[in-house]
Amino acid sequence: MAKDFEPASDKEFLEFIVQNIVDHPEDVEVDRKVDEMGVLLSLHVHPEDMGQVIGKEGSTARAIRSLVRIIGLKNKARVNLKIVEPEERSTGSRRSEEKEGLEDIKI
Image: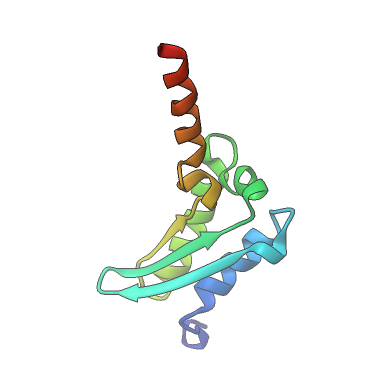
């Protein structure tokens, strides 16, 4: 059965799992990069779905990572998963607004 494996089936597997977990399956996007270290799958989801993908104390994210690694091991590839934070969080705009508010208070 391993001979029927297509290189991007790990990507399709991840998309299938996540689309069935989240409330906005149409926003699930997976980027696949291959280099000398192995395969890196970068997962992008709707901001409201981050909690569902990560789970309580990261349990869902750990489970998804384990499943993706198993797919890789069966096909002699090292597969890693990166869950990309939505842009609202990664830009730090909210933090800068909070800092500005604190500077006004310090006087």
